[in-house]
Length: 147
Image (cartoon, rainbow, N blue to C red; front, side, top):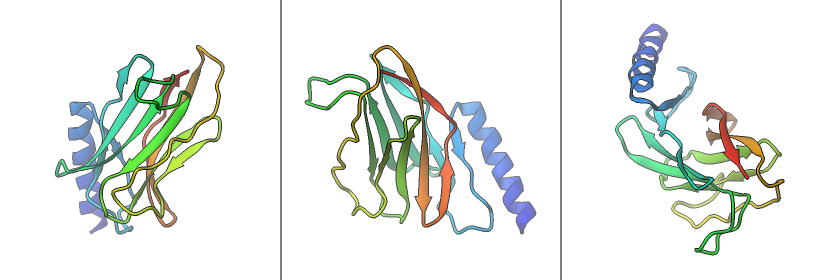
């Protein structure tokens, strides 16, 4: 059974890698949702959005980095995690300065708050995104964000 899961994970990873998406891996022994895909970062004027999908292309949520205050009254140097699927998994965004935005324990859908702070202007930081359920986390690779 484990061989089938590992082969399936390899097949999905290979297929997803070719299409330019990041696969969030999972241990085959854990009860997990379908393979979750994090799309390529969508960047616009220093801001960044990462959308999360299941392998059947169902949208489950997103993470957003906002470098500077914008026209919609959103703060700068801020991260937001938004979970749109009532699947028991939370979406977490971790910034290298220690801040984290999480949907863990929140009802879905919700309007999560921005997690704010202050970074020196024109610097680079790193961020990664995780889906978490209990003590299990399935995380993306590191993504660079700018202030």
